[in-house]
Amino acid sequence: MSFRKTKSASSVLIALLLWAPIRVTAQTYSSPKYKIDQTFFGTGSESDLQSPGGNYSGSATVGDLGIGESSSLNYRAYAGFNTTDEPYLEFVVTGSNIDLDYLDVNQPKTANGMFYVRAWQTSGYVVHTESDPPSNNIFSNQQIDPLSVPTTSSPGTEQFGINLVANTSPATFGAAPQQVPDATFSFGAAASGYDVANNFQYIKGSVVAQSPRSTSVTIYTLSYLFNIGDETTSGQYTFNHVLVATATY
Image (tube, rainbow, N blue to C red; front, side, top):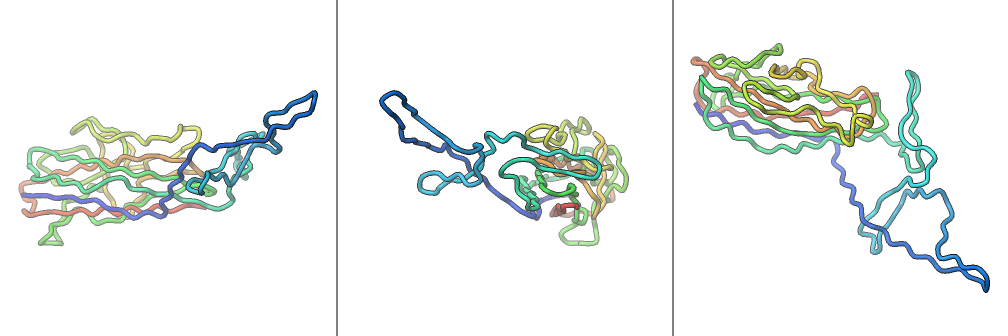
């Protein structure tokens, strides 16, 4: 039995910010008794930094008395000269097509994919999985049985499932969600049912990842598990994985 799995996904927004060194020159002020080489008036923050030629731009909060987020149960505030008041959601899929070749009744197959999410000026986000389970390319009604509850690998039993954590069985694969730059800025996590090592599940439409608040980048690794049985219909199977990220308010 041959099996080919491909993965694609839709993203809400992709953005790229490039930084470059900025050259600053200043005229020398002097008198017969005093000399000042450089002067600057202002707090140090800039919302529109441009390089010569206009090839690069950026912003800075140098000199601000306070920056970052503060919150309570009822309020949330963001301090900083260049803090935006616009809601922002970034969702980027970094995986590519995966070919698992032939599946063996006695041998599980595993694979990994990656994506990351960042949400700003929101109450958080949720990521849903919206694809049907792997389907036979000829007999579309034939699918590899998805796991409706978190389950460990059982070779010889038809199984399809995912999780978003590091696993040691049936192989060492996957990874825990990675917070960038660290856990004081980023708060994304695997959702219930997809957050236990070596346990896999797949329910179309379910939440697989989420954050309860505005957050910097969280990098997720999707772990896929495939098992077939003696009665699994022969042929090539395809799984086009669609993920949908939605900001919450």
